[in-house]
Length: 145
Image (cartoon, rainbow, N blue to C red; front, top):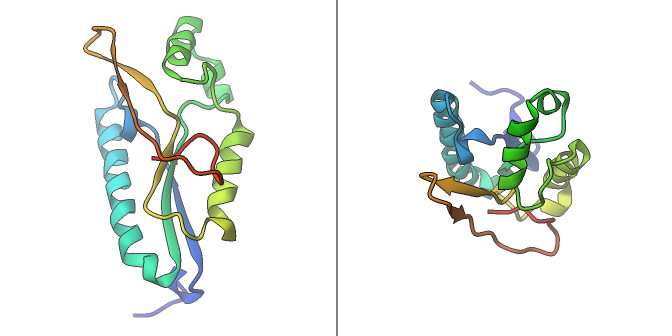
Protein backbone atom coordinates (compact mmCIF):
# COMPACT_ATOMS: atom_id res chain seq x y z
CA UNK A 1 0.00 0.00 0.00
CA UNK A 2 1.38 3.41 -0.97
CA UNK A 3 0.09 6.82 -0.22
CA UNK A 4 1.11 10.47 0.04
CA UNK A 5 3.04 9.91 3.23
CA UNK A 6 6.00 11.83 4.58
CA UNK A 7 8.45 9.99 2.31
CA UNK A 8 6.91 11.58 -0.79
CA UNK A 9 8.84 14.88 -0.74
CA UNK A 10 12.30 13.70 0.34
CA UNK A 11 12.83 16.66 2.71
CA UNK A 12 10.80 16.57 5.88
CA UNK A 13 11.04 17.18 9.60
CA UNK A 14 9.58 15.18 12.47
CA UNK A 15 9.63 17.08 15.75
CA UNK A 16 8.13 15.58 18.90
CA UNK A 17 7.62 17.35 22.21
CA UNK A 18 8.39 15.72 25.55
CA UNK A 19 9.73 16.48 29.02
CA UNK A 20 8.63 13.96 31.63
CA UNK A 21 10.51 11.19 29.79
CA UNK A 22 13.75 13.00 30.56
CA UNK A 23 13.14 14.22 34.10
CA UNK A 24 10.40 11.96 35.46
CA UNK A 25 7.72 13.28 37.79
CA UNK A 26 6.01 11.97 40.89
CA UNK A 27 2.73 10.22 40.09
CA UNK A 28 3.41 10.17 36.37
CA UNK A 29 5.47 7.02 35.87
CA UNK A 30 3.24 5.78 33.05
CA UNK A 31 3.50 9.12 31.22
CA UNK A 32 7.26 9.28 31.85
CA UNK A 33 7.72 5.74 30.51
CA UNK A 34 5.80 6.48 27.32
CA UNK A 35 7.76 9.70 26.77
CA UNK A 36 11.07 7.92 27.37
CA UNK A 37 9.99 5.34 24.80
CA UNK A 38 9.19 8.16 22.38
CA UNK A 39 12.76 9.44 22.75
CA UNK A 40 14.19 6.00 21.93
CA UNK A 41 11.76 5.62 19.05
CA UNK A 42 12.86 8.98 17.65
CA UNK A 43 16.53 8.03 17.78
CA UNK A 44 15.84 4.78 15.89
CA UNK A 45 13.56 6.51 13.40
CA UNK A 46 16.25 9.14 12.78
CA UNK A 47 18.66 6.37 11.78
CA UNK A 48 16.08 4.82 9.45
CA UNK A 49 15.07 8.08 7.76
CA UNK A 50 18.36 10.01 7.60
CA UNK A 51 19.14 8.67 4.13
CA UNK A 52 15.87 10.16 2.89
CA UNK A 53 16.73 13.66 4.19
CA UNK A 54 14.13 13.37 6.94
CA UNK A 55 15.22 14.59 10.36
CA UNK A 56 13.69 13.35 13.60
CA UNK A 57 14.20 15.26 16.86
CA UNK A 58 12.66 15.76 20.29
CA UNK A 59 12.20 19.16 21.92
CA UNK A 60 11.91 18.91 25.71
CA UNK A 61 12.36 22.40 27.08
CA UNK A 62 10.70 21.74 30.39
CA UNK A 63 8.22 23.96 32.10
CA UNK A 64 7.11 26.86 29.97
CA UNK A 65 5.45 30.04 31.22
CA UNK A 66 1.88 29.12 30.25
CA UNK A 67 -1.49 29.42 31.98
CA UNK A 68 -1.08 25.87 33.32
CA UNK A 69 2.22 26.69 35.02
CA UNK A 70 0.90 30.02 36.22
CA UNK A 71 -1.77 28.18 38.25
CA UNK A 72 0.76 26.05 40.15
CA UNK A 73 1.14 26.91 43.84
CA UNK A 74 3.89 29.45 44.52
CA UNK A 75 6.20 27.05 46.39
CA UNK A 76 5.88 24.42 43.67
CA UNK A 77 6.89 26.99 41.05
CA UNK A 78 9.82 28.15 43.18
CA UNK A 79 11.03 24.56 43.67
CA UNK A 80 10.88 23.97 39.91
CA UNK A 81 12.72 27.22 39.15
CA UNK A 82 15.53 26.19 41.52
CA UNK A 83 16.18 23.12 39.33
CA UNK A 84 16.44 25.20 36.14
CA UNK A 85 19.86 26.67 35.40
CA UNK A 86 18.35 29.86 33.95
CA UNK A 87 16.26 30.25 37.15
CA UNK A 88 13.08 30.91 35.17
CA UNK A 89 10.56 29.08 33.02
CA UNK A 90 10.98 29.04 29.26
CA UNK A 91 8.94 31.56 27.32
CA UNK A 92 6.58 30.19 24.65
CA UNK A 93 8.45 32.19 21.97
CA UNK A 94 11.72 30.48 22.98
CA UNK A 95 10.15 27.05 22.54
CA UNK A 96 8.62 28.18 19.24
CA UNK A 97 12.00 29.45 18.03
CA UNK A 98 13.62 26.10 18.71
CA UNK A 99 10.86 24.22 16.89
CA UNK A 100 11.00 26.71 13.99
CA UNK A 101 14.74 26.22 13.73
CA UNK A 102 14.42 22.42 13.69
CA UNK A 103 11.72 22.69 11.01
CA UNK A 104 13.87 24.96 8.82
CA UNK A 105 16.30 24.03 6.05
CA UNK A 106 19.14 25.28 8.30
CA UNK A 107 18.73 22.28 10.60
CA UNK A 108 19.10 19.64 7.92
CA UNK A 109 22.12 18.06 9.62
CA UNK A 110 20.56 17.75 13.10
CA UNK A 111 18.74 14.48 13.59
CA UNK A 112 18.25 11.92 16.34
CA UNK A 113 18.68 14.56 19.04
CA UNK A 114 16.78 15.36 22.20
CA UNK A 115 17.03 19.08 22.82
CA UNK A 116 16.32 19.95 26.41
CA UNK A 117 16.81 22.54 29.12
CA UNK A 118 19.69 21.49 31.35
CA UNK A 119 18.39 20.73 34.84
CA UNK A 120 19.88 20.17 38.26
CA UNK A 121 17.82 17.30 39.64
CA UNK A 122 18.30 16.34 43.30
CA UNK A 123 19.20 12.67 43.79
CA UNK A 124 17.74 10.91 46.84
CA UNK A 125 17.26 14.25 48.58
CA UNK A 126 20.96 14.26 49.52
CA UNK A 127 21.75 17.57 47.89
CA UNK A 128 23.70 15.93 45.08
CA UNK A 129 22.69 16.68 41.53
CA UNK A 130 22.78 15.10 38.13
CA UNK A 131 24.37 17.41 35.59
CA UNK A 132 23.39 16.46 32.06
CA UNK A 133 26.12 17.06 29.52
CA UNK A 134 25.41 18.87 26.29
CA UNK A 135 27.09 19.59 23.00
CA UNK A 136 27.72 23.19 22.00
CA UNK A 137 26.75 24.50 18.60
CA UNK A 138 26.86 28.15 17.50
CA UNK A 139 23.66 27.56 15.52
CA UNK A 140 21.69 26.50 18.59
CA UNK A 141 20.83 28.32 21.79
CA UNK A 142 21.61 26.51 25.04
CA UNK A 143 19.89 23.17 24.53
CA UNK A 144 21.16 20.10 22.83
CA UNK A 145 21.80 16.64 24.14
